[in-house]
Image 1 (cartoon, helix red, strand yellow):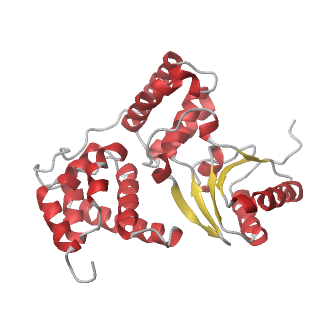
Image 2 (spheres, rainbow, N blue to C red):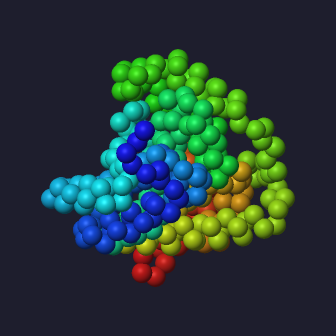
Length: 299
């Protein structure tokens, strides 16, 4: 039996509030696995707090001292760990972390849901599958994201970069998980830039509002990030959160908002978002609107 208390939904917030107040330095904290789900209210209980960090080298000892003291005082198991300790991370993991807020000088994120899911799939436990289904239900990923990401990392798995799993076993675990998902209804709108308008008149407004909300969140988290990177990060996040969003809707959002994305980001779009986003970004009218926006006052 564990000497530590179980971690209920309120406890990670209590820990992070104290950590931000008592650490007093800058840095980023990524909530890993069940801890990230618990913080987002996608899970009811976990055994410990798992986190990964990005900190100045000179501050790491201070951070470790504060974490160990809080672990004792709160009687809570706290471990620094990452999905990268178990599997090679798929491309784009660094931009799929989900911003949660700030405590003191610490920016808080839930670790990339795709990497989180793959690390849990590698273990192949029923409880892990339940956690991934919660991420799917929350719209943070779907089977297509997982299949694409797994095929990308399998050569590295074969090269020995994963802990205790072979490519064949990894594929078998993913197939088992996908079979456990409820059947999805077909998308209401073709994934097609030239296709008809969305069947739901509110979908474009919803996506535009969500995009702007996430832009504001990224700006709050990374005040020095260039505008084009802010917009790219927010757009990727919306694409992952709304997998049924069509290229048509995204195209209209881009034209309406004139978001700033540089040519390199546009060319790389298919590497980090679903193909509908790439098509929307490459649409000639969107690119013309962007070029005009970039030539405007103050640019």
